[in-house]
Length: 534
Image 1 (cartoon, helix red, strand yellow):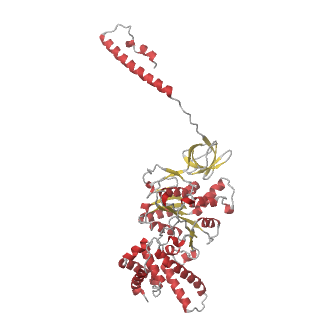
Image 2 (cartoon, one colour; image 1 turned 90 degrees about the vertical axis):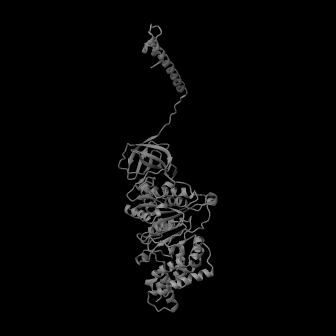
Image 3 (cartoon, one colour; image 1 turned 90 degrees about the horizontal axis):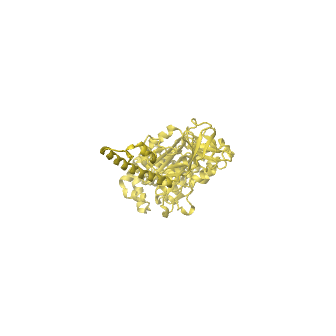
């Protein structure tokens, strides 16, 4: 209604009418109303005069075709590489192949609800995930959505899944040990905080068990852990999560789960998303451990997507950039300088071999990227020598720099004597007559191998490991029957805790043991195994 229409609509405002007192009062009120409305219209006019609407053009594409895990899209000429797009009914995807007339999109959701002709809209941002302390104790998918039935994440900070690795000058040497709780690894194949140590072996040889034991052993070690399951069976992932919860490890852990039945796009981004979540804590000065279980299935997912997108295949049908795929991710694991917080990110990638072929394409690629490998032998596994670590084929390129002094005192001699035993054991099978020294070498080696056995899910503290390894290195277990070695080792561990707690504290704190400390430790070990000597 315009101001010119007011007199016709409200006749009481017409001053020519002969009105009674009541009508005059009503007319005065209407005059006040008219004045207020006039001021309001004036304010509206002023506001509209200053309003200049801005137009924001939005690109909307069309789905040309849909395949298993990918879609071909037309009509997005300005889309960027790795940009997040939404297709059809809000199905997320990543712009992967940027071609002249179409865009190849990796789908991060089920493609059943997508069909040709569906609309595609850009978001203007690269694919990202939520990060922050709210993720601790949670199970999420590679996009950050909770899978544990808990509340939605309150994290508001998001970071891209693809980030540049820290520069060389931003890195510090790896010197602090990351204890796995496994005697054979901590003593012979040490891992440092900020290192990348590959776990490689055939199926069903205990690769995941070593990684899970390492996570469990970080309790009270001020280390945040991430377990990234890539293409695993849902039942296996659920069992792993239950194990971590039962052992109290979920309080300082995050599980990024992507099952084998999930789209290949989710399997492809899973390790990158987990690395971004881990980097958040590393950049705040925390020590972080991340397990990729496993990168063989990650390579399979990338090969599947690449072939669907018609990328040229190379060796074993993998695309030519499969090496760069893993190197740009594993290079993000490092130890930062103190000026940058001093945090560290330790990576334990897992790779599966076939028929013990450690020289296959993917294993050799990742061996050349990492700082060493832990090789698990199926032959040792079948002989119930667990963990089935082949010491001869395993190596840590960081080495003793990350070991506590007590380990360095015994690791060199222990590795040498164990390697000699393995060589002599092969020749002893021919039934030749052996001299006394060779028999002693074989007997000592069998006791060392028995000591290095360890049940799954039972990591051992540092001081107890040192006590047992010192004892076997000095021949204290030589007179103990092989069947009773494990019981004797348990007795030694308990005696060490009860009788020499001060030495245990010095071992744990990284102090060099004096000759008197070593002598006292060996006396305690001899007294503990006295009842087991044959």
